[in-house]
Each structure stands twice: as C-alpha cells, then as structure tokens.
Image 1: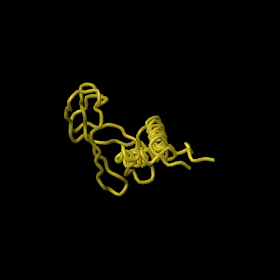
Image 2: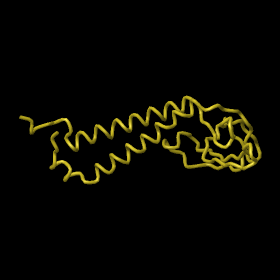
Image 3: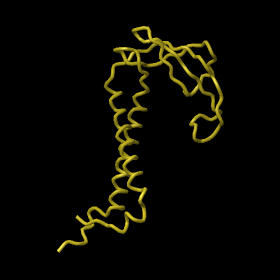
Image 4: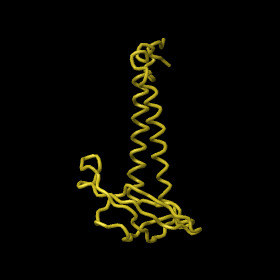
Length: 145
C-alpha cells in the first residue's frame, strides 16, 4: 500500500477533521434505531416561545421557536427546546408529540427524519473515507513492482 507522505504534511489538520466527520457520521447513522422503537402520542405543554433571527440556516423562515415539557411514566419532567413553532402556539398551549412507548422519556422524531439523518450519516462517513483516500493516497500503490 502506497503512502503519500508529502500530502499529509500539507494538510495536517485534514486527517483530524476526517476522523471527526466520520465519528459524527456514525452518530447520525444510529438514528435509524428510532424506526424500531414503539411510540405513543402524548400531550406536551409549551413553556416558552421565542423568535430567532430569520435566515436560511434555521429551516424555519420567520424563526418562531418553542420549548416544550412533558411527564414520563415515572413522573419526571422532560424538556426539549428549539423546536419549530409552525402552528403559532403560545405559552400554556399543548401539542401532541411522539415519545418512546416504554418510558415516555425520549421524544421520537418522525420516521422520515430518522431515515434522512441516517442517509446524512452515510454521506458523512463516505465523504470522510473518500477524503482519507485522497490525503493518504490509499489504493495508489506507486511502489508496486
């Protein structure tokens, strides 16, 4: 296996970034497990609403966000924030959310969202491996007889 030593000296931070992107990809790929979790729909209370700066990066033009709270089966309060407030809910209103059926302690996003995050994780892992191949020159065995 050839090792392109001159390429790694040019980009010393590149391999570190490639490893971090690969790890993030693995974490994203674990979201596929949400497809196999039983869910229940329960009510959650809106505890805070706020407006964020409107930009393309919020994926919510207008920027209205909310924080919600709900009780799990043991009576523990769970909070989740920075959720899109598409319906214009206000503090004290309730909304229906999907949670895991076993404990009601974790919110389960939509099945489509889980698949999308899984695909993004595969792309991150593939991209970091392709970058590593270019940087380290794997597969280019120039010392082959």
